[in-house]
Image (cartoon, rainbow, N blue to C red; front, top):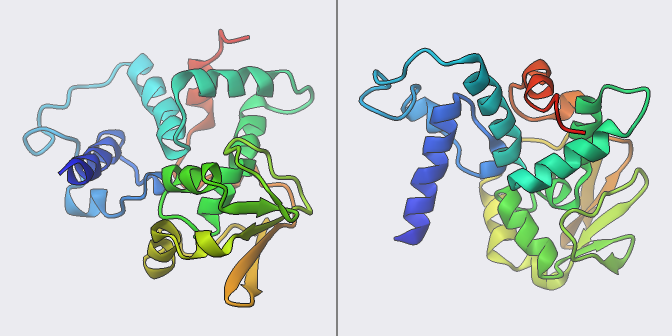
Length: 210
């Protein structure tokens, strides 16, 4: 029952935000009901500018499975990088997180499931076990899954019903014996974000954060 309720909640989040968020792991929310929650979406009022910015920020937060404090800390870190738009730095950082990389290689059905796999020690980076989901994968790093991880329900579900059809160009995924092996061949690009995204709105939402 709890799992079914969580699934419905993920559908509602995507319908409310009006976009498919691959990281939530539930596809088809907008195909079934292409309107927000409520009686056929009729209850939705004209959104304020603040609400529009909030919703754009929530897309990022929900897709990458972050809490508000985690996202704010990532924004602060991105703003300290000079010479680049901080929102681009933010997206590259989020796309480089180990949990997201595992998800984008179709080794997990959602970002949350990928985080669980990393935390349980199922993922190796350059041959060493890394159990920190926020670990930032660097270009040239190789990512492998343990034998136990390759037998886990999350991995098998992702291989049977992949949430994303293909990994981004920065990720090379190839067969390694009975399993797969991944490599980050280049730093992710801001455009690698896997959903419709308006950078300006997130920039405006967090303009006071320092």
